[in-house]
Image 1: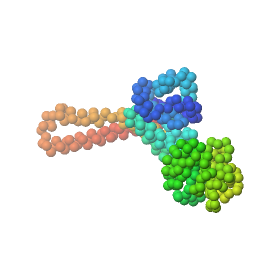
Image 2: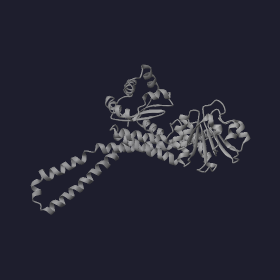
Image 3: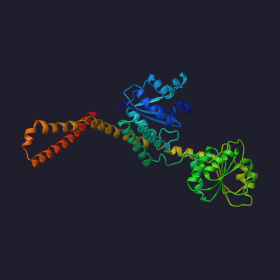
Image 4: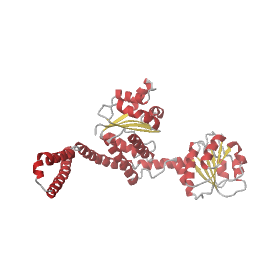
Length: 409
């Protein structure tokens, strides 16, 4: 297993801007990785790139020395400066053998993620493997490792609570909104069309909400989000003139002061006396404190959501030891599977040789004797020899596994 190695740059060791210098999209991976594998003398290669990590999973007998890393990184990005290369090499962590496998399991089980317990990483690992396998870059070792990696991650997510307490602000906000029993025909106003509101919109659209109006300082950006939601777009400057009413108001802008004043709010609700839901995801708050004090609202604010997210993150981190126990057991399991596979591959030629010996005996060595047998006798003899051939092959591999595995113990 010592040839199984991982070269890793993550958010824990390096700035995201530096990691980004090694990012390759799928088109560039297709162009570069085949040549990279040959140039670096790698038996196998898998490339994983996400928003906060780049990992090279390799099968090679070469030592991962600074010179190797310099060649590798420059092959990925020939525009790197000497300063870039020095920084990348300094921030790189390398893993070998069992520690590499353990690292891969922890990455896929989200223990090494920016947000512990986020399941997206296992999908990214699986897709990275499938793509590199399609390019012919991977082989038996990485195939076995990824198979065990996926099984390990699934067990971690099933048998522990590592992913069961949401820590995303948007996810928590949506859950609170749902807990209030808001119906799918609710009139929903978005104030701001940035990433946070766009993510909130995805949750709402996914769960069949359909009545949206998007306000934004720039109408063009409001129209982009409104188009995704099949909703309406308005300039924020005209929000006070909006008379169509609402049930839920979700706000997240980059403004440095209140965007929704009490006067604007009063204009929005008009004569509607029903209790409204306000979700303020902005820092500083978009909703003037007087709106909350003077009106009948369910108020969901960023500070309470952040506290709940922090509490949930602590709960997730409390599951880490249970996850590591599963991972340790899976590493030990893989070591035996890996040894058994090596033996199977090493003995792969034996069945061919046995078959050759049998055919030589029947057709050459004992050809005269065979000619004295009637068809029925030849058929019986062939069945006996085929039976012995099959049993011998199985016994040889079984005995080899037992001997080699006992020696390892």
